Length: 343
Image 1 (cartoon, rainbow, N blue to C red):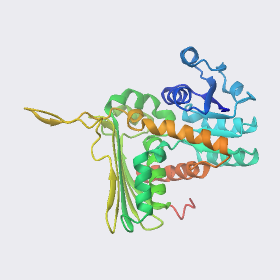
Image 2: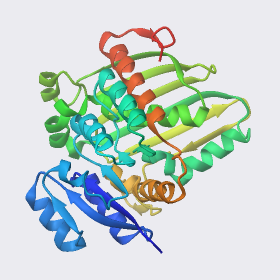
Image 3: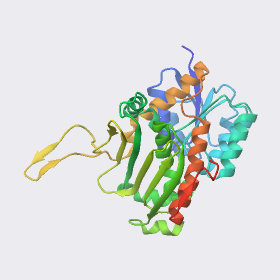
């Protein structure tokens, strides 16, 4: 079986995980090239996985002719530059972690470059669409199990153990709404098959005083009304003391589908004189683990079959457009009509 040859730009935590999945778990793919600006990261991956090419400059990687596709897992601030230069270099298949870009001008530029330079497969890293529980939830909604959807509620809380990382990377992440809730918005519009019509939000700094210096927040809530009339509620936090917590529910006229009522690490409940306790999931890599493998496998399969991915350019584009308006709604404590803003 001829393998799809992939190159990865960025070997941080997520880039390293993608490399491991390609090397150890995806049989029809080959880790052909790696790139990082940190020599130590390159040396570790090269020693373990022995890719043919290992470079410090991503411009070298995107010009390797034998590569069938690239995975961009770099800092968000470089996504636009790397996507555009890869397209111009003739790379036809690109997977990029979210967000698509950091400004509206960037996402318009990316859209134009992908079209004009004939990029064939473009997939954005909304990994949650590949979660088996959420796929089943989507199927049940589409089959009418809950009747007409009325409300979608979403909770996502990052663990307090990541405080140092959050403050350090906030200036280049785009902030809480941009960094965390683009995942949730993409998931919501996919589950209920509708874009948002209005958005209102509020938030602030409750736990990490250092975020004030970079104009960021650590907790917020967002209320939505979708074009099909469904109501939405999002709650996000960066200071969860007990681990990584996700809850999603879609409530309808005939019932409800939900997941993640408790952030269980496993199915064990411990009981003693102090009562009952469960161990909680610690971080999103652990909670969403199988989805990262599934999304890269999907990218590989799309290259091989020449089919378009289930989550692509328009999904990444809409999530970024929404995030800017949602951030404005939170920052200014106001309701924004997205239809008037021509999303």
